[in-house]
Image (cartoon, rainbow, N blue to C red; front, side, top):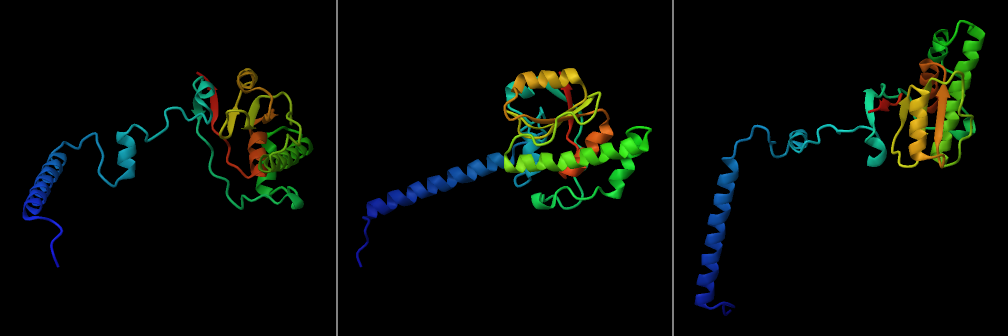
Amino acid sequence: MSCPFTAAELSDLISKLESLQTWQAQLESSASSQPTPGGYTRGDPKARALAAGSGKPKNPFPAIPPIAQVWKLVKEEGSPFIGNTSIEVEQGPGSVPALVEDQASFICVDQREALQRVHLCYSAGFWARVALETFVSQISPRGLSEPAKHFIVLRALGLGGYIRLSDRDHFDRFKDQVGESGLLCYSFATETELEVFCQGAKISVPPLFEPC
């Protein structure tokens, strides 16, 4: 079988391969001699993220930049919801867990009224989750108790997550940014009611934000 290359072509190819091998060796030697502090270790995603400055989002507000840039984090998201997070529309919200009912004492002095508010918020949370997953308009009323001091927003134009606010003026400012289209939000007189609502929706309590 004849060789497809001439002797001169083989000699030239070998020379180019040797040059390439030398260049690769020099490149690897240079890379290994570079100082590592402040950089990252190859294969370590956490170190790479920190070196790139992306270990933690600079602005955790879950919205497009024009909206997010005017808000700052005040309190981190609550603990993840414990239990089954799936929603069965046909079964409804079901009975309120005893541990959730126990929160009634933090709502108001009148125990009967407090329990009614617990059940209302728990049910509203369930139907809010249904509205989210079925892409429908708000099912239950926005104002669940008065005076409205605590707000949760689950859906809005430009918003990519759940947030909460603790001031009427803050909520109005956010609403001015996003408008009414597609807005899914609720208000409560107490933070406890907001937490009960989240239990009904089977979500963690969202992070708290306020204007910068």
